[in-house]
Length: 180
Image (tube, rainbow, N blue to C red; front, top):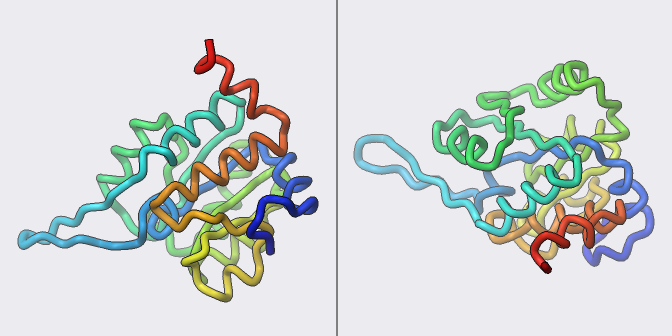
């Protein structure tokens, strides 16, 4: 596992990513679920994570979400970010992953996945580049290639996106439009 971003093995694996898949609860959010009196629930997303996902897309990397929970809020966020591969209400994440890569014709070694709990292990163990967050479950953190410094919902996805872009030598290229 890597927590510093200096692990050569993690960099080499991230350099091969063509499809990056994100879990939601605990990764794109802090994992908290806020329920209202009418049963509705709210999620909070970090703006840095969204920009990071868009930068990956700008660099030609396909992005996707696989989440065990079904939520119209996540569908809205995915739409806002241009994530067209949204798989929600998925309890067999490995099967969903296999179907997704078959449709996209992407080899597992060219896929990345970031997750935080044991339900994510079947996909984390199948992809070429696996990641988690410092507040993830210990069983997950002990089996991944990279652990972000930021916790879930506080910029962890952005940190991971930047890491992938740097590993692929695309970071400066995607930032050019902001530096004019």
